Length: 261
Ligand SMILES: [Zn+2]
Image 1 (cartoon, protein in one colour):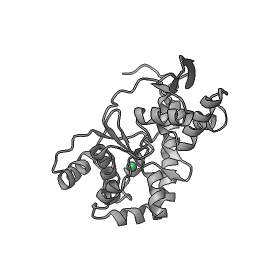
Image 2 (image 1 turned 180 degrees about the vertical axis):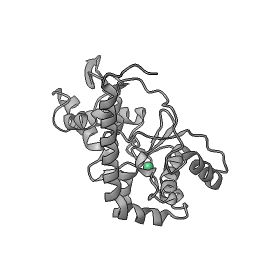
Image 3 (image 1 turned 135 degrees about the vertical axis):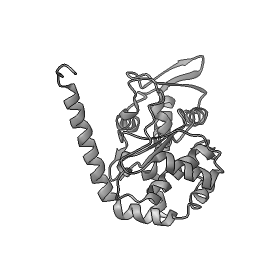
Image 4 (image 1 turned 45 degrees about the vertical axis):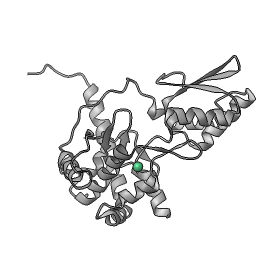
């Protein structure tokens, strides 16, 4: 269904691969043995050398988000001994620079009480209703950074490395109905609960049929989809306003301060 597909893009930002499946797909695309090392290196996003017939490829972790077309393009380059990062691959790296982190990933301070909605309460009631209270996963209002996309917004994300759910602060508004926020939180809780499943090509799939079935058990799932469709433009504007406010706050924080009393 077209709307379902669109929501898949809008709803969250799960990686497409886990490290072993990415390594296997790249070896397949390159048609030769390959060893993949994932890095957080900020200046070299991609490098490789050949050693005794094996390609040793170092890639920034952003490549866990690479679509099939980028993996194939990279494989073709490795096959042909060309420059590994032109065209498709270069475009992907440029589009994913927000994933290049300045600091190693550590658990951020968790902020759950918002102006309108309390994530702890939302999480606790969903945990009772769907997981017999057994799920243990931290949740926080995100900062809404690097998540806006052309024509869409990522309302929630599940970070499998930190095992952390982040919810976009644009949902902390009085005109966002609780059931919509719940549907987003529930979706991310399901990611923690279900994990990824390798498909036939070895790619990790998160939105499996089982996932979609579980997701549809949320009583107001259809209402949530309809509400999003009707309110996306408004949420996009609200998110841009948050963005501007954050930038303004950053600028004023940089100004020299007088003595504090
Ligand atoms: Zn998802």
